[in-house]
Amino acid sequence: MATKILSALFFIRCAVAQLSGAVGPSTAYAAKASTKTCNVLDYGAKATGTEDIGPPLASAWAACKNGGLVYVPPGTYGIQTAVTLKDGSASAVQLDGTIYRNGAVPGDEFISVNGCTDFEFFSGNSKGAIQGYGYEYIENGTYGTRLLRFTNVNHFSVHGFALVDSPSYYIVFDTCSNGEIYNIIIRGIQIGETDGIDVWGENIWVHDVEVTNGDECVTVKSPAKNFLIESIYCNLSGGTAIGSLGTGTAISNIYYRNLYMNQADACYLKTNNGDGTVTDVTWDTVIVHGGAYILAVNEAWGSSDGGKGVQLSNLNFTVCASFIAPVLFSVDS
Image (cartoon, rainbow, N blue to C red):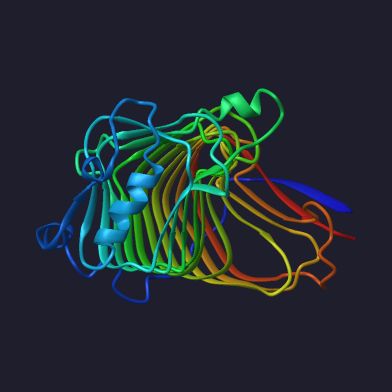
C-alpha cells in the first residue's frame, strides 16, 4: 500500500449537484389524521416506561396504514418486540413520546418501515425519542439491534425527534427515493459501528442534523444519485463519509453544503478494490475544528473486494479552517 499525506488549505468548487424533483410526502399529516387516527393507547399500549409498545404499534399500523396516522402520545414506553410497518400508502407515524429499550429486542431494528409511499415519520412536539441503552451491550464488547430502518420508501419525510445511545447503527435509509430527512439529533457514546445516518437511493435531501457519536455522521452508500446534504453538525465522529464502496459502485450528483465538523472528518471516501464510479460530488463550505483529515480518499480501506478499483471524477471542495489541515490519499499499490 502506498500512502501520501498532504497539507493544504483546500481546493476549489466547480460543479453543483441538485435534487432531481420534489421530495417529501404528497399528503399533509393533518389530512391523514383527519381521515383516521390510531392512538396506540387504544390498541393496548401503556405509558409505564416498561410495557412493550411493539404489539400495540403493529396493531395501530394495521388499522391506519392506508390513509391514516398512527399516534404515540407523550409518555414513556418500553420496547421488547421488533416492529415492521410495511405496505403503507398516504400514512404517517407521529412519535410524541419516548420509547426505551427494555431488555433484548430480537431482530435487526426496533422499528422497520418497508415498501411505503407518501409516508411521514415525525414528532409533532419535537420531544419524541428512542433510547437504545446501547452502552449495556458495547461496554461488554458486543452490539445489539439498530433503532430504525426505512427500506424502499418513496415520497417520504423523517424528522423532529432524537435517537439516543443505539446498540448499533442508528438509522438506515435503504433504496429510498424522493425523501426529506431533517431536524434529527443523534447522540451516543464514542465508539465505532454506530453510524448516525446511512443512506442510499435517489433524490434525497438531508439537512439540519446533529450527530455526536464515535463513528460516521451522515454516510452515503451505493447506489446514490441526486442527494443534497446540508447544515450537518458532526461532533466527535467519523464525519460525512462515502462508502465503504464495493463492486458495482454507482454514486453521482452528491452536493454537500454548510458542514460543521467538530473533531470530525469532512469527507472520508473509502474502498478497496471495488469497481464502478463516483462522479460529480461537491463539498461546499466546510467548517472544520480538528479531526484527522479535511479530506480522505482511501482506496485501501479494509479487505479487498476483488475489483479493479472505483473510478473517481469531478470531486470539488471548499473549506473554512483556521489551521493547515492534512489531506489523505491512500491507494492499494
